[in-house]
Length: 107
Image (cartoon, rainbow, N blue to C red):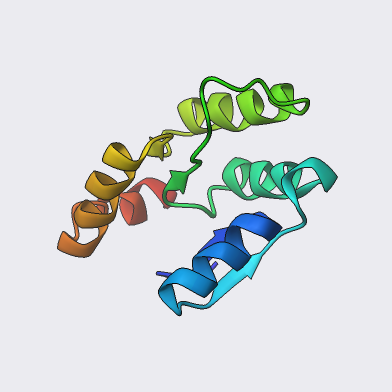
């Protein structure tokens, strides 16, 4: 994966592109396998940060897949944000170079 490339499941990626005018590599929709595609990238240490915004009050039918992403991030030491406050902190850290240690971790 190239540095500073954004990846998202289908609908989320489309929404990000519409709002930010950024180019996003889109996986399948989450419930159609996008979460498995993301999980594979995490397992191969090809993702530096995950922002997975969700509604904590609404249980999703694909909740086990979502929880798998969180467990993989923990297992592979991938920074994870599940809310806007943490996402903003991670994005600012990325911009400052605070996540450059990930390059050393990959070696």
